[in-house]
Amino acid sequence: MKNNVRDIKRLREKLGVYFVVGTQDCDYSAERTLDIVKKALQGGVGTLQLRDKGSRLTQPEKEQLGREMQQLARQYEALFFVNDDVELAITLKADGVHVGQDDMKLEEVRARVGAEMYIGVSAGTVQEAREALAGGADCIGVGAMYATASKADAGEPIGPSGLRTIRESVGADLPIVGIGGITLGNAASVLSAGADGVAVISAISKAAAPDEAARELKRLVDRIKHSPK
Ligand SMILES: Cc1ncc(COP(=O)(O)OP(=O)(O)O)c(N)n1
Ligand SMILES: Cc1nc(C(=O)O)sc1CCOP(=O)(O)O
Ligand SMILES: [Mg+2]
Image 1 (cartoon, rainbow, N blue to C red):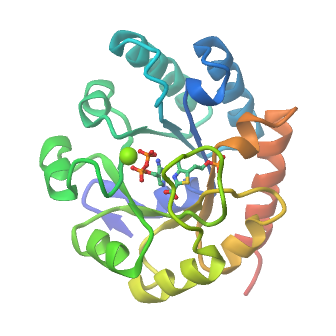
Image 2: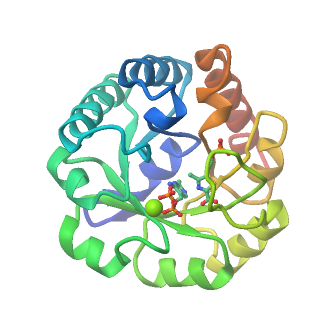
């Protein structure tokens, strides 16, 4: 389905393996972050999100990191999202911006970014998911699926059953990614519960071989999402 200028079918396809990352996940090194991002893209990541929470980068350094991540994403035909920082997403002309429940409100984000940019919204409950759908979110990040060490304020895990309830409440058309504690070992349960993709930090950033980790996740997603029902 095409939503004016935002192609939701393409978005859904690209969400299969969604790599969320910032310098805090990569030894506080922009160089290492870019090296891991490149490997992740080589492995088949379809969507990349700059989520720099370390606050060790100045804003110009964060912008530069974003530019370089975006260039890599383009090279590999992946979508590039910016987390939280709506103004940076606008400056970079990112494909998308992701906001949580404590960030800028969805209506305000849409008014700032215009009609072309995808907006992702975090949802941990049926109510949040329904509000995101009604407010015109293009996709939702549902979590925390499992316990995670990558986000100190992630809520109690809701597990695949929580995601399934959210899927049933919003219907089939809204793209959903599960997030939080997802690994190669539990990703199948998240996808089988109705997610279009899996969003991960540590499963790729902390892997000994990030390209192989991304590749294995992509294989799993393709097997589960594209197998005949
Ligand atoms: C795809 C995706 N889903 C959820 C989140 C979490 O966003 P938020 O709740 O705003 O928390 P922070 O990431 O800002 O700490 C996300 N970033 N991406
Ligand atoms: C960024 C983020 N958001 C979450 C949410 O529940 O909304 S959990 C999370 C951290 C995901 O990192 P990892 O894959 O290493 O568990
Ligand atoms: Mg946020």
